[in-house]
Amino acid sequence: MSTAAVIDAPVELDALDRRIINRLQDGFPISEHPYAEVAAELDTDEATLIARLQALLDTGILSRFGPMYHAERLGGALTLAAIAVAPADFERVTEQVNAFPEVAHNYARDHELNMWFVLATETPQRIPVVIREIERITGYPVFNMPKKEEFFVGLKFRV
Image: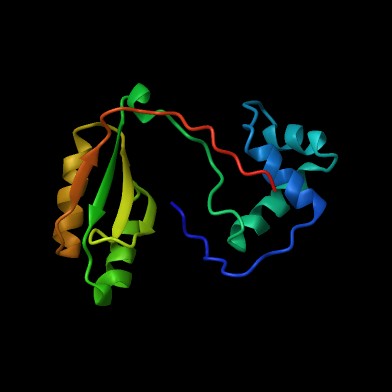
């Protein structure tokens, strides 16, 4: 889940931070020492790479670093869900929704349905169970918008 702070002002990145961000957008090795491999590519060491990555996450420059799984191929399920939350309740509902381990990518939207999030579950049957539980805890109906077709967009931002 994305929990990074929102950055409103331009930030200064040094050359290593830029190389780390650019390199990590091109995949991550699956190996016994993946951080060491990437560090060697970037002419640094594993500890420095891990510390820099954590600092980028802690400061909100990066909102997320982690694997992307094709949940359906692993027997799981994904769905996009949305809630129309009263502005006065938004913080409370955000905390309640984000407490579910199945919730990822929870964002505020400028729309009647002002909270959008992804549910990722181990089985397709778990999606409606989690939705009902979120509705019970928050007191708001959840709109389930399951994926009908998948598109791959290889969007990368060079810094």
